Image (tube, rainbow, N blue to C red; front, side):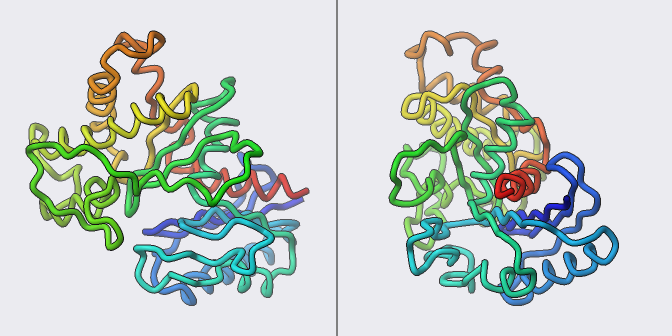
Amino acid sequence: MLYAGIEGGGTKFVCAVARSPLEILESASFPTTEPQGTLAECIRFFVAAQARHGAIASLGLACFGPVELRKDSAQYGRLLPTPKPGWSGVDVLEPLRTAFGVPIALDVDVGAAALAELRFGAGRGLGSLAYVTVGTGIGGAVAPAGETARLMHAEMGHIPIRRDPRDTFAGCCPFHGDCLEGLASGPAIRARWGCNLGELPPEHEGRAIIAEYLGQLAASIALMLSVERVVFGGGVMADGTLLPLIRRAAAKYLNGYLPMLKDDAQIESYIRAPGLGAQAGVVGALLIAQGLL
């Protein structure tokens, strides 16, 4: 049996066909451009892949949000108002349904990545974790998601945060200005300093400023959600230099309040990089596709 998975991110879409979530036969990635062209690229990939590997039985779509996940909503499968230009209101499911006629599972990209990390990655053997992606946007999700009725999926990137006194940047979120995503996402970093975070000099204060904001998020997750681990992924985190600074900032904000996170070793174990690396999202998409069957 073959499964198809799509990780639809703000920068790129990753497509894969697999025999199981960890047994990927073929994959490809495409830049996230306008909706019709991006989804058409995905469809072309799966049509060609099926000719080589056989028919897919189900498809998992892990898409950037916000997206309507309530199946009883007339807007199910549509992007809600989003900072991504041209994507608000787009139905991301219908072109795939029309092309393939197989069951499709839908989740936000961070939701699927959280599930994959809990099952196969940095949370393996634990009962819960939160996954945060820091890239074109900032998103977060908890696995397992639970059965509580929800207004919508979590939008952790749009929470208000305490400003670092060194930071005079107004913020770039079109909805909130200086929310977490408006201050600490990849576009916010480039707008402020003219380059990606990894291109800043090692001792540049920008690294500490971004870590302060993400450390606040990690501390808030620990206090509000009480998950067993927090995992940070995404393009801004890719070079690994930010993670120790985030741990330090989170410890500062917690200030010894949680007894199980009082020392450096506990904080290091609690705030981790993805065990699946950059594949967490697409593995999660394949996992929710497998779950349909």
